[in-house]
Image 1 (cartoon, rainbow, N blue to C red):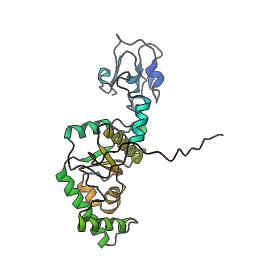
Image 2 (cartoon, rainbow, N blue to C red):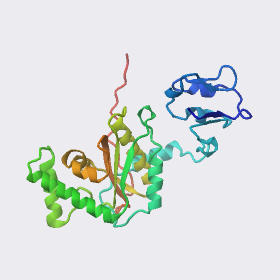
Image 3 (cartoon, rainbow, N blue to C red):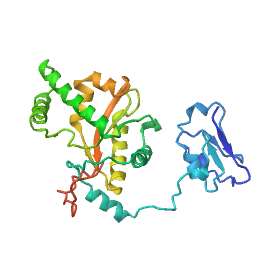
Image 4 (tube, rainbow, N blue to C red):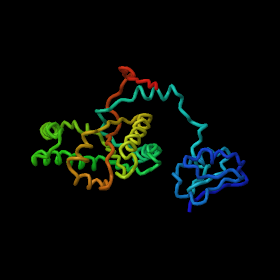
Length: 275
């Protein structure tokens, strides 16, 4: 049973909820909106009907419209957004300092607002939120690389990873994790419509929000290789479900460097389609 409710004292019967429903399951022709018979199972749970209602008369899935964010408050300007894009940098030197649990939670809650294919909303955020577990994870990563190389595991980038492992063992130079205090792994069910895309978009949201808090990030394909391709036992230890696709991995923490300005892009590669 779909929890779809209308406060008739607030409803103006404008029909916007029915018009905006992506799957056209709301009937608003004869007054108060209602779900069409037999169509409840088609609901995407996107909440567009609640979001578009100008009077807050509609509630769905037990959500109170009064608790939704307002589109009229706190919106960044286009220039501030563009400046964020231009000044975002990949960070490869981090302070030896943990983020607070509260800040990590705020960043993850923000990233959870990222869109997903077919409104699937099943991206799993697997996070290492303390340096003690990070140390264990780092050791496990380098051990996995060593074992895989010794056992002649076939992966195109394993020789390079093994060189980085030797650098860690001999000089404690951590090229793979860059001494970051935290790791974030995103995964989503393989049966999802767009599992990898959902994860990458979520990490993009996380990264941009992190930058507004002075937190640096680094997309880490090398960790993805280890977790997704080289050591599936490590992946299991991390609690990533076997039926999930790992979308991507990110390390994060407070930057140990401070940039004065953004870089200057090489330019837009554009193909204007004309048919």
